[in-house]
Amino acid sequence: AEAPGEVLRELMRDGIDLVVGGFPCTNLSRAASINPCGDPSGIFTEKGDSRLFFEMVRVVRAVRAYNATRGRPLHVVAENVSGMSRAMRDHVGKQLEDVFGDGNVHATVLDAALVSAQTRRRIFWTSFPLAVPPPPANDRLFVHALLASRAQAATIQGSLALVERQNRCLPSR
Image (cartoon, rainbow, N blue to C red; front, side, top):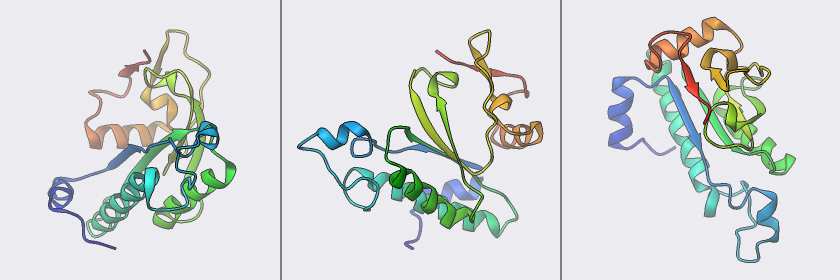
C-alpha cells in the first residue's frame, strides 16, 4: 500500500478515531444499469466512479495501522444507496472486513432522514453494530440511539468531541 500523504500523516498525529465517508453511487444504483453513458463496472474496479471508495479504504487501512501502534481504536461509517446489487454490497463489506476482520463490519439499511436532510433508504457499513430504533416522535434522533450501547456512544462521541453531552441530538431535517 502506498504511504499516506502529508495531510493524512498530520491528521493522524493529531488523532483520528472515526472515518466517515460516502462514495459516488452513479455506477452502483439500479439507475446506473439503464444509463447508456454510465460506468457499468460498479464497485468491482478501482477505476471510474468508485475509485473514491477504494481511496477511503486506503485511508482507513493507514489510519487503523497507525492507531494500532498507539493502542487507539478506529471506527468507520461508510454509506451509499441501498439499491445496489447484493454482489456490490457484499464487495463493499468484504473490502472493509479486509481491514477490520471478518464479522467486524455491519451493514444496516436506514432511512437517512433519521440523521440527515435526505429522505431515502441508504445502506450504512459500520465497524460497530447499529441499533435501529423506531422513528422518533419529535422528528429528531439521538446519536446514542443508533449505537448498540451507551458505552460506545460515550466513547465515540467523547473522543471526537462531536457532542457536548451524550443526549445532544442532531436535527433530522
